[in-house]
Image 1 (cartoon, rainbow, N blue to C red):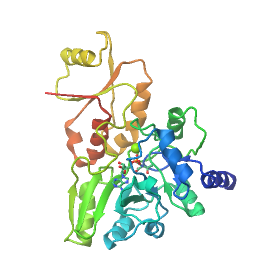
Image 2 (cartoon, rainbow, N blue to C red):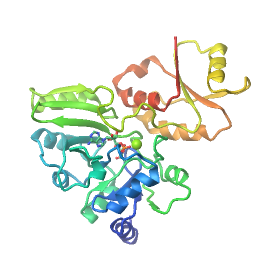
Image 3 (cartoon, rainbow, N blue to C red):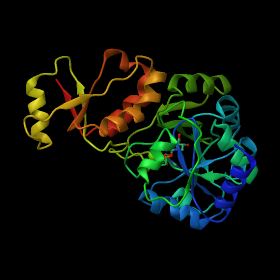
Image 4 (spheres, rainbow, N blue to C red):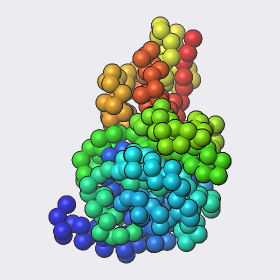
Length: 320
Ligand code: TXA
Ligand code: MG
């Protein structure tokens, strides 16, 4: 990014505006954590309810320490392992933090994103950026600057183009409870549970790590990431005419209505990168619904994050 553009972004953020920023996971809608006006704008622009807390984006460990009230040694170790990268930790919050960011909770989510432009902005501003994904609440997340622009045609904020997001789905989120030596996976991402587990045990074998129960994170609603037309997941071998009729009936479509199949690469890394972009472009075709067929190999752990997003993006699951 050239100096002029950087200055413009910094000015916009300090003046209380939001700016759409690239990250390696998905694009974010960012506000300086010190600007209450900009924080409020995030919620109004996105139509996001105030009960859904934001992730604070930092340049690294030192800055992360400024937004928490305790920095456990396990957090330091995991940050050294996985930052900058698609990994978010929920820790006790500093009491200087604006409660809009944390939805009044006593914890805060922090991550250092692995994108050169965004890291440069955070370092230059020298203030963390609160940012949710830059989509309308509940809708498909953006993995390119064009996605953001299409989602907000009447926007009055800057959209920085940092190229397509290389990871493609949101970060892995964990909560860390140092006192009880307990780590919970709140949202799966591309950083797998078993790699996390391996690192956690290597650091301190007394820690327990578990996949969280439903509702552990306020923003993890059942319906999320939804495309403009219904997505149907087909989790059975033979998808027949009868299933098609069933779909038409459920969505009150006429009997000539057709669906289009969402296909993804066999590699989970590539599939994650394609997912949101494909959902968006299929939504723009003249079909009535999108269907996706689960394959046996998608049961593998590397697909956990993708399965989670597909399930939440879907309006119907057909299984045998
Ligand atoms: O990859 C990502 O994480 C992207 C990019 C922009 O960094 N951000 C993102 O933000 O996905 P958002 O707002 O769409 O999702 C944040 C998630 C939500 O599920 C929210 O509930 C959870 O993090 N979260 C935030 N603060 C939390 C807290 N204090 N306790 C539990 N969950 C929290
Ligand atoms: Mg989101």
